[in-house]
Image 1: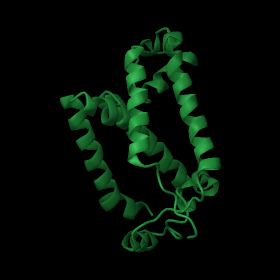
Image 2: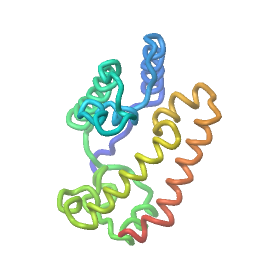
Image 3: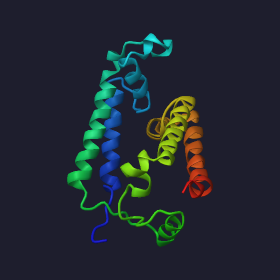
Length: 185
């Protein structure tokens, strides 16, 4: 690994996140990404079938612009602000990942064994993608928000519900990492 992709330092990223949160609060907006699926379904006409999606999606159009900005910003960061796609991983993590079939761990953020087009178009990849999407979608709706909404906004506002949700996200991540992931591969 010639380069190791380092995140922006906390003293740059933290104030930028705080500035975004302040601006959203100032303009009366709530941060969160999972609610955009509701807006997209409403745009697509799901309100004709399910009453839940009957609302004026134009009132939430700013949130769709926000997500478009996230996608564009992520693309710009990955294409022009990152010296390399390698990730510095603990050698024990690399060993554990290779034992479950993920080769070249740390060579890139998204391992080919999970994220390549061939893996996604396989029956196994499709079922994993479908199951993960259903679980994430259900979890976000059941907890009243996604990881970013609860973790950034809810915790900073000291919401008890967000503390419980974030604790659940971490517990779920640990269960997935240690108990489920090794059996999927």
